[in-house]
Image 1: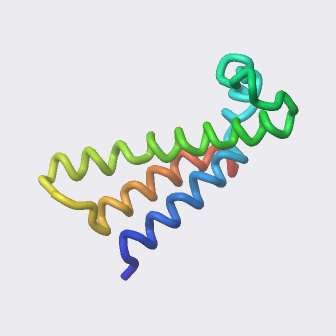
Image 2 (image 1 turned 60 degrees about the vertical axis):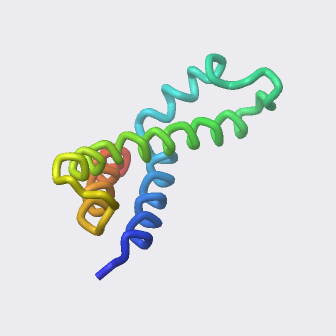
Length: 100
């Protein structure tokens, strides 16, 4: 049986992968003048890294919502293996469009 910490590492890996393969990446890249600070280097590689980070972090947050709802509805006090597996499944579902 995997521990919740090991499952969280897998969740982080999946969300980082989604930051590179998501179909949302070009849209966030185009909107870089809106979110990119003026003092940051305006090179394409810096914008691509920022875009990847934004998509990865958004995937991490959004995929955690079903797990949080499960914990709230079942009255769990701590995250256990089931809630972490729900989080992992949600992250995989969000990553699937980029992998196809």
